[in-house]
Image (cartoon, rainbow, N blue to C red; front, side, top):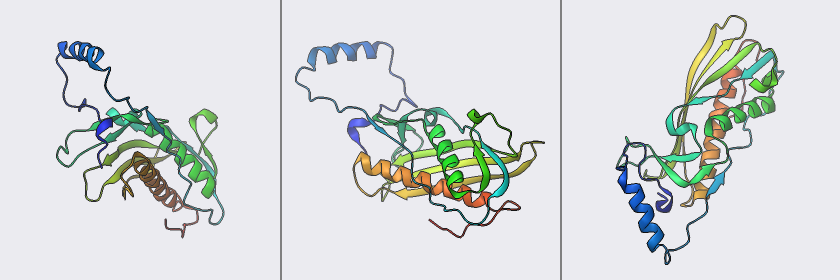
Amino acid sequence: MLFQGSMSDKTAIRRLPPVLPALIVVLLAGGCGSSAPMRPDLFYSLDPEPLEAPVGAPLPGTLLVSDLAARGFLGGRQIVFRTEAEPLQVQRYDDLLWADPVPRALSSNLVRALRHAQVFEFALIPADRALADYLLGGEVERFEHLPTATPPRVGGALNLALVRADDRRSVWDRSYRREVEVQGDTPDAMAEAFNRLAALLVADVVRDLRTLPGATRSSVTP
């Protein structure tokens, strides 16, 4: 379901002529006395419980998870959506937002899941200022609501690279893609689907990291 009262006017593609915003402000100021009150902004966290449990001994070494990158609206806090009628237009909800930008939240999810699953002896963030054996970084390519799909769903994609810290040699370069059906027609249901999506993407990464030499492969499937 598309949340009509929350959508932006396709700011990714179209720009209003300079004079129109001023006219709109004047019209709203003069005629908003009888309008219904606006819905307050809703802020959602992206912090799912890790899906992968510890299996075997951790891999000897330290992994540093870098802050993920994102282009355009994905780097902000407004929740992004795309409709089937206009698949090339990336749009944003005005009053449905993330508590933290998606790249930062997903980086935190990765670190939390790696620590929970005990894949490495240590899983660090850049603020830890410690030496690492491996570096994990990349980009959030997609993280959007698909309200007019049948059924409505959310979709996400990550492009990640793992390199050795000592010589910056690539260990692997992989993409992760998932979609999750939205179980309901409310913003809360959408946020729950996004959290499930994040948990599945992160679990896929954790299982791949367990395939490194010396690590134990996970047998847990979400």
